[in-house]
Length: 419
Image (cartoon, rainbow, N blue to C red; front, side, top):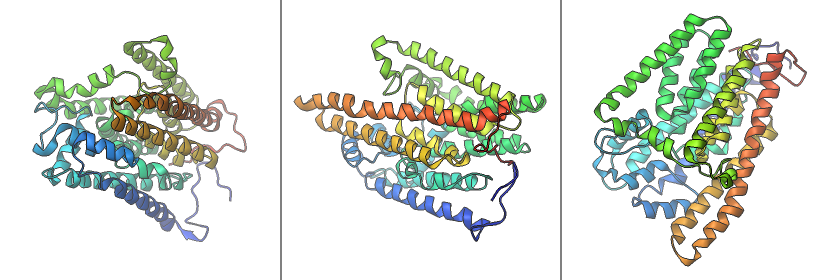
């Protein structure tokens, strides 16, 4: 069945009503989210960090939510940022963590973890719902992704991703800029990655000649950011700024920069080179947007976030969840979905099994096994991951961005559907 460019599918396809087609991926995703919960819930009673680390990595199941409870002794339910309690995340994530703590920390982390997971599961299901409503998307690539099992409860990424992705979809709708800006600010101050998408949104408004609207988006984003952060920055500037200083000073960890470790680049140098690489990517993607015949914000955002994770000096396994909704929105070929998913799962396993060796062996005479494992297991998994991310970027540029920008469409390319 062929559709006109930007057309909508009919209400029924394959004999299934549209509402049922949207519900089926949601139910599949919910099943995976429940599996993810069952993998992690039994770890919550292991409060001491060493005990939790050994048990969790031995089961290839990890949750930073539980780990932080043991690391920071949360039984007293301290408020982050203003009471000397260091919390290396943006302020809204700290607020969510603290609010969930009202569920209880007295005996172990189980009640608070459950409260966190309910919120994260709702965000994961919300992602599937918003992707399912996008014409031309393939929500099954999100609903059946192993990432939902592995990462829904690992960290708070999915909670930040949900409003960030919803914001992009609202921006592409052209009539919801102010509410979209509010959602984008919410996403940024939950996890910060969505800040990468703001210049792409502004470029799209400039391409249309909507300079006043672009200034309103930027102005509202700055006002909301100030309102969210100012109370914490005023009360305790050091604790509030820990997110920035922690990530600024953090050395490179198992990524493309590890391959260049023979050059002995300092952390400030890696920071500067990474920032230049991101700015160059924004410039290139922005130029493709500027020359585009339609709104290219979503494929440009997909390419930019993938490039960021390829280039950034730190890569945690749960970051992959930020790519998965774009695989669905862009209807990525199944072979590429499988390749990316395999690379992600392999890196997840390699990451946590070497952590298990570190927890178990420590400084024992057998600790040299950790070095062997790093060179022969973790590094190959990282190289594989670093190889497939540029492949996804290239596919996005060749299939979505370049044809729309350069005017050379072909039979295997479909322009982004109208919102």
